[in-house]
Length: 88
Image 1 (tube, helix red, strand yellow):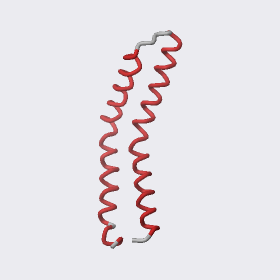
Image 2: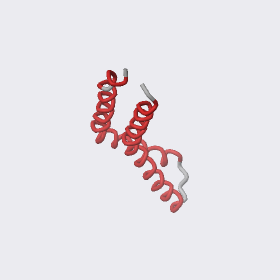
Image 3: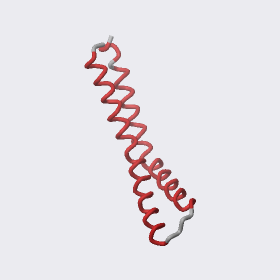
């Protein structure tokens, strides 16, 4: 296995991780910004108000896009396993 193959595997792994993690991270960030804006406007500084909406939103994203995330991870794993003879 040469350096180019290793770099290709690492690059592919990083892109897959970014694609799979992006929906969850973007949802948590968006809800966090909206809740922070709401808290600053109303001056309500309740800790559970910041946590519960993010928890619910991330849970919904996992429920609705979990199948896609799993398929992406399976596809990446299958691709790596099928390339093993090429790397040896």
